[in-house]
Image (cartoon, rainbow, N blue to C red):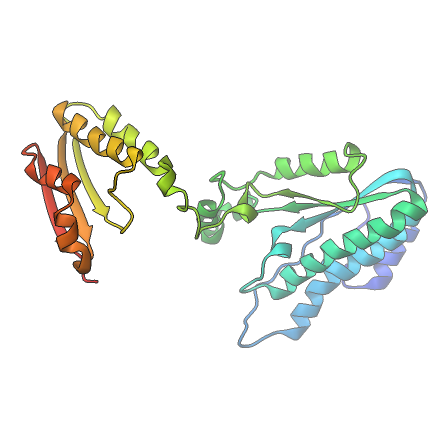
Length: 285
């Protein structure tokens, strides 16, 4: 093990010169991360981030590749910050984005010259010592797998990209639990397909006699129509109370739609059922 100072070019060159044997694989995974104050920006800190996250990998790859055997492999470990703008770490995020482009450039050049493949593993939010951080834990809600990644999962990805994916070159393996593909705004776009009601339906069909259900519904313009999934969901409500489930139903309407929804035949069915406590509450809007 050879310690190096990533802020000094001469120590990096010295470390490479001390490598006397052939190199079969090289992994770069150094990270320099500091939160920034956008109103009192530290330009020296910005440059330090680039020194570690970009300039050092540029030097090390260009020098170490000369010592590598044909069909060897280089893997740069990157961050999903490369694909997103940043609120408080512009140096880190932009350097990761530049590193992704640099990886592709390396693949263009050095695969042809030396036969060395160059790829990257792009890691998402990884647990461990940082899992006590509130930001990390809140991020779980934006990850479809609903958990942070494990370090050994990233290690597996690095190993596979380094040794197994023989025809992968100039590409990135994203390992983020689905974080980058998750769209918070559109996650309810398919409610009309009935998926939403299928998820809720099990609570009504599986609730046992004597249980109590207290339900608030915010009524939107496209709800409670003749859609089969919605009619089935409503029927499940009544099947539950007929089995002995105690139910209180609260409907929230906008004032402009209040009178219209009061005439809705499905709402009327709730109002006329003496087994369900039904309340209609107009919202302030």
